Amino acid sequence: MESLRKSALLLFALNLVLPQSLFALHETGKRLPKTADLLIIGGTVVTMDGDRRVIENGALAVTADRIVAIGTSQQLKSEFSAKRVIDAGGRVVIPGLVNTHTHIPMTLFRGLADDLDLQDWLTKHIFPAEAKYVNEEMVRVGTRLGLAELVRGGTTTFNDMYYFEDAIADETRKAGIRAVLGETLIDFPAPDNKTFDDALRYTEWFVSKWKASELIYPAVAPHAPYTVSKEHLLASKALADRHGVRVHIHLAEANTETEFIRQNHQGQRPIEFVENIGFLGDKMIAAHVVQADVSELEILKRRGVGIAHNPQSNMKLAAGVAPVPKMIELGLAVGLGT
Image (cartoon, rainbow, N blue to C red; front, side, top):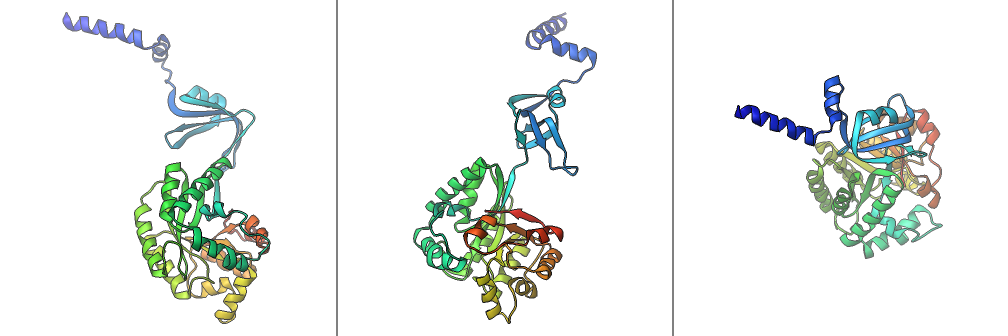
């Protein structure tokens, strides 16, 4: 009798707590709505899936850090209840953009020097400014500004190369942004590491520290073939291969680079040079690639190298126009960078 009394009280309590509609759903065999943290409804959803679907009056459901469903607004509103609903009517809902080449703290150097070619810009203005002003505090402040600009423009992933890269990783993680980050390796004293060997040791520590992160993908970032020796380029690649991470490098950026490589490496052009020393690989992102003919692009295609095309930077420094149509025709992976 006591157990029956307790059961009756439990049923009475359930009637108080649960709306009658839920009992009705249970009785008719209908499924209860799934829950999501966020439901975005009413926008034009550009999926970028294998079929390149564009869904008018579309919707997507998000739980934690994952998109769990994409469909029409009618479909997802019937399937999900959400803690937060955003009406995206009249807007386009797209995947986050990817910036494939940045030096993110250099937002603080914006406009420092204009109307110069690459070598004058670097050697007479940027390298001296970095030697004088770049420290960890400057890097953190510049990174925060850069991250805010990225997010405001719809960019959720970026590929960076700079100094004090551990501080950049820390600020990026705090912001919840995804990034491929590499400490700059260069053959002269840098603001954080005064020798190449110091920078290589720092890079190995950095890679080991961040390798398990869900947001930060550590990389190895030798600056360029004209600022890093053959031996140091190969040491950089060996480190990346050992840890299975990406390499990020400036390559074939300007006429001055081409002439430097020709004079110092038996008349070879930059892409020919790095190919002949065994440097290229399918975990590599090459920034700029302005100075490249068809045969050199075919080398990059064969090696699986990705390209970061930086039109605004190329125009600022009068570096030329990258052969992007030919890159796409050959099937190279090309992304936009700033």
